Image (cartoon, rainbow, N blue to C red; front, top):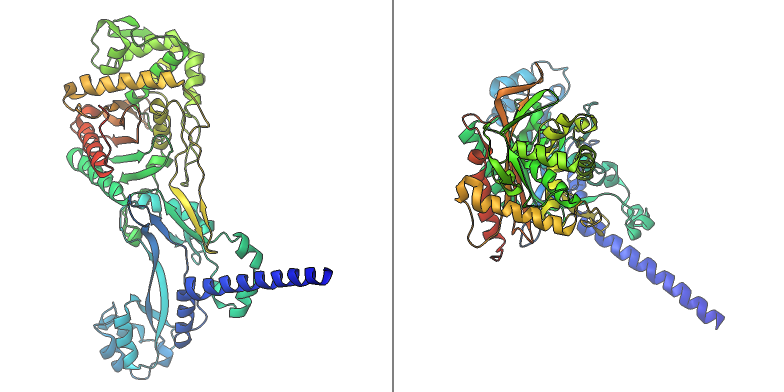
Length: 569
């Protein structure tokens, strides 16, 4: 029995090793076949230069398999070694019309016979490589190369980032966006391509079997059609109002899955060096803060509802203006409304109403609620460069700073932190975890589904979420552009914001520059989407209702049709 047992153990080990070798062979011969084919090609060109290698990034269409957002393209570089040129006129005659430089430049390259080799064309096609090879010109070399390619061009550029050289000007790596954030997953050790084949079979076997290898591809939550539609609407805002910066986010308010994120001006990651200003490489939805204006009012109202300081039917005497700590605050038009309720505060966006609510709630409670909404922290979104909100005014003892914060002035938030907090108004009271990547596909063949918990951080009671949602639906049905954008078959909760812009040079605020913001979620009581839009310093429009309402409604209709969302009323 003992001998039979040993035979079974040995047989089991042999079987496991055979399976491991078989899987590894499949991985090397099928999954990495392109790498080894490229290595074989290099036997006929210049030696010693590792081919660029990097993992891929994918978009996730609503239906079908993921599609490429960032991948590799292959081609060739043509070089000339003047020290080996015997007949310069043959080189000029042969290469003119094929390479990307003219006759005069070719002559200049060969003018100094002691000069080192020089590239005369890059990213040459297979057809042109064949033409150059057929010339059999001594001193003209063909080198295989691969480079990063972004098939969608400018689409989602601020999310994807690009690959470029670092400070040492020798190493290619992710410079912005997902390319940088997931550098450890996407980067490749090019030396791995030149290891003995059978050594590859047995090397790092444990890592291969258990998935310890960090190299892989990433699959994003970005839906390409939704992304393109968002970008189209943002471009329309810029065209109509000549704004400095315009951006938007479309997200699932329950899960934090980001379907689209865009900002303009942007850049083409395939040719990023042509951008006039390198500041466009960043992502203003993550790495910049803004005073958001009246879209912050629902937070103050929700906090007071949640604490029991008010109800939707609570009334107050709106005087139009008031003096707080020696400073005058007023409604946007300075006019008094008399006795009005909390719904009117939202419908008419009344600053004096927010002062009343803040006094009812108390400064300490307002601060506690606003911090619980994540106003002063990072969201943890998987993009580089995220900054915290500026909320130091909430720590001051005066009433003035708390009242102005309640209507979105004196505190500044990133758009991504804003949309996360706004999601809690409609999703039952939770802060979701915004994210761009949903899956990592490791080079070992194993996949990792990213885990996000949208219900671990409750900031409002469920009944508060339902009540503030009901109030925001009435804003759309009754007040937004006079109720003209109400949707008969769908409930939509939304609010606009118009904020004075701070003057960094002279202090205080510009009198003629504003930031417009807009958010909305739908279907309101079981929201599948939250849409956030903003535009900085639009020209010729006073209020966000004029600049952003129609783009929001257009996006809402698009999403309802594209995702076949059933009516909820």
